[in-house]
Length: 423
Image (cartoon, rainbow, N blue to C red; front, side):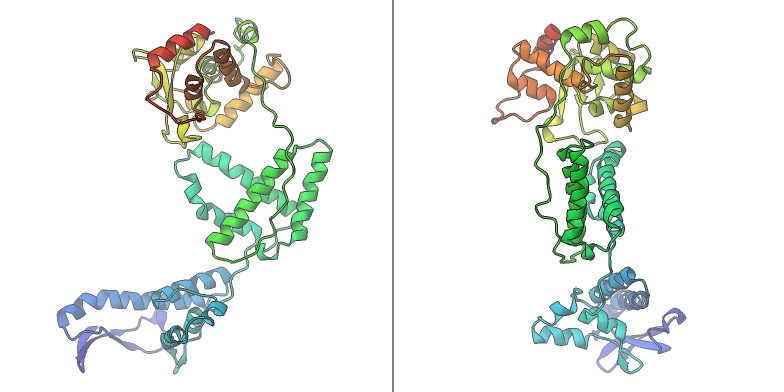
């Protein structure tokens, strides 16, 4: 291995490792360093050799029978040679001088153009066929910008409906290559949901969610992998019916049934604490479940909790807020000053546990009520007490339907108002 001046420029002379003899049959190779300065030549030595090894590795990978690996190798080899991989159809539409530059960059192999390099630079490597299940595997990485800041619990709840949508489609249509999915396939999938809607098994809203999540997977992979497919996704959604909202518990029901002595004694301690904490705060179950010693502030002049993006993503920018602790909610947090570790990574498990207990023990005011009805009940009590709309929205983490001015009401003022309606 040496740097030698040949003519007016320095060249690097190196023995080709046995591993690369398949793509470079010469035992010794000379690499021009394009300089007449030995100092500059030595500074280029490692980079020049590294680039060549990269190209050999890409050429070896390009010989694989695996279509996806072969296509990725072609992209990498084109990059190493200083070009962007383009499909042959796009290469053919380039200006003549750009096409010639690609042709001239093709290396020789046994006195003939290297077929792997020619395929990479001229774009003749067939794009791999991606089945829907394979597309879903790729989707998680391609859509990672959508998961930034999510906790493990949030990430699981984000993934599950997409997994479900793909699984449902595969059961009805099959695990087809995404470029082979037709309009008829999508209509068959829609018909499956229509039949379930007609029997009352699901709502149009539920069916639309499956269609939306499936479309998101397909569109993201198509865009980010630059496949250029025309996807048959238009005009598939169902007209949504009236949105069903959970009714609020009445104040009398909360006082006389939920807060009756022993009514909640069968719930595990943490689930009971989170339920009681919700009575006078109206937080979302997922917000209460992730509270920690840092965000439960019992020693403050006004005891309160802080809803912050601590290890998780907030529902919106408006969700960041502080809520005073009063009544049974304050007492609940005194028993759990460090939060609720059992449900920190499983707020869905919390809701399932509470709803099951309330139903089994006759503690739902109507069959339409649920754990979440406590959030609605808190807002109704504030509304009945005439608490200002901005204060209500700030406490609930909702957007204000006008421009915000000033800092809003102080925590002390809000606490005084909430104490008047606390249970």
